[in-house]
Length: 427
Image (tube, rainbow, N blue to C red):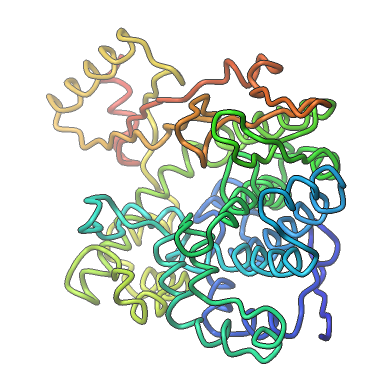
């Protein structure tokens, strides 16, 4: 097949085939050019205007690099052959399956990415909000099915089904069996998704918080066998544990300094209100179309919402974004609040209520940076694999991994014009 390449800000060049190019050129994937990676983060970091389009290409590229580095190691290849029964042809198909899943993992993002996830509808089965992964798999098994399955090269070489691509994202072992292991390259504490967004978001925001030595990470990837259930585990060679630690710390810094920046969170609030207003006018309700209504969902992108903001300057939140007079933070608890911090916050809320000052309480800045639990396979600890093949959790090597903990910060915001009055009230 013909190989194409596109220049990328992080990796230099990203290559793809005719088949992948057909998918990339589809209107469904091209829509990601009109979905910002970081919502309104450019209100704080002006360069952060990159899109899900380039991130998706980057995840495909990085996942491929991870796979290739695993396969070229003879110890890793022996583990794979023993547990998956794969020969070379099997590895070739696995590689392509991983590339497609990585490429399409974010195809279901709504306008402004994660900022709009709070207004996704409730899944009647789980009683929880749908997330962008549900939309991604619905798109893969629906509108993109033909592009995946009926490509002549695929039919001749791999015979990959859309259902298999979706299963790798969903973690559905009933469809792809033991190949579900490869999901760790797409979604885990050591995956290509966060590996790419840390580097890419840092680059565009103009910060160094998310930088880690990714070539070193690639060279230290290893496979081990979990003695508890004999399953394969993706890990890091013992002599490279520091790079795994660096990834954890880079993620912590990016969330605290960029993703949970006080102004970024203020604009997420305004954006959510604008989206509710838009959806109410257009559809008669305040949630996004469900995955069952994927056609209407795919008609939405950032451009449509920007147009709505421009055409409705009298709507309060639209006016606020146009004039950059967003809600202002007047109080925040420490990252890990104590009981007295919770009491102080409640006292401040009582004072604001007494004075009739509108306020917004944001608990969005909650994050577990590194889970020490073994129960959650997708977010279980990064495993360090020694020369004898023994597995030990990263927290046994790294004090950072052991103690980085979680953030439960709560912030109080008031309207732009009430900031000074609120400060006086809360003295």
